[in-house]
Length: 415
Image (tube, rainbow, N blue to C red; front, side):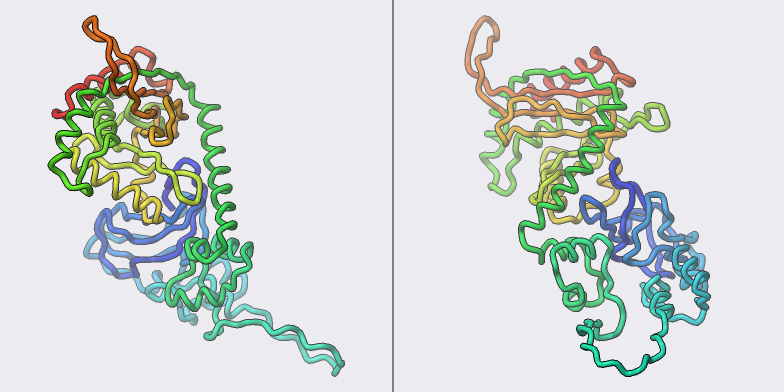
């Protein structure tokens, strides 16, 4: 189970996209995982043949738990091993003295799941008692096929809290398992507040740990955007509304440019040491409609054109709010940007998102008096702030970073 964020401790497999015997290439989507914050698509890290799926759909496992076994390309999967199931399934079977070889798996590719084991280990009905006149127990709803509904633990918890009929949802879901997103779409609106509160609690824990363990220092820089806004207006004049470049893309591009030139700002702190990155995977703080936020990254932001960066930003925001992010987008970030300008905020002093070592904030673009060459006039100005890790950089390097960022915005055509 990959770590899809600093606050992630476990995840639930809600869907396998592959089966034993399938060939996969590095970067392919092989599974969908339900986390505390969102539903994430998990990519495979190695090319080869799926030899075994080690965790069944609906199982929640800690970060670091092996999910599948991949054999080298060209190798044949071992069918017997592939059908056995996860270590949890094997433990359940051993405890209940169940012969796994005699079971028929209902998981992907015939994988034996814990539900298959539980189905044959239910206690036998007790011997009939002498006839007694008592009221019959209330009827118990049983799925048509007699099997337990396929539903993730998180989805089951949400359904119980909302009083939703799990069997009805399972029937509507068909062959796929019921996910937390299904419950959220079905539950009354007030129940969605609970998810937001849960996410805020998780975020608060990460931020508290960041402030406790990372020695932050803060710098700010007022940046004149008159040249950038003039260039943007002229560039967008020939574009359709859907193709226009927003000021946010300029700010992201300038940030990526500065990060590539001041290496102490771009990287992660791992194993008590700084690990710099020669690529800028720029995280973007995105607010979610149900409350809370995510910070997925745009890979290689420094190498993208403004048009490509704008398209990547639109796509990332759309997929983040739809719960269709990839695992690498949540785990590969080397520097994050948070922009609250559209909320009327003048300055942002953010908290570093570990294991990264810096975060950049932008406030709103507003007209301010600006003196240049002995003349005073009104200019569009944005305040850029930097929070950085004092174990890696200092005020001098942080100031250098903000200076490069500001200078980049004075020549927007070169971005």
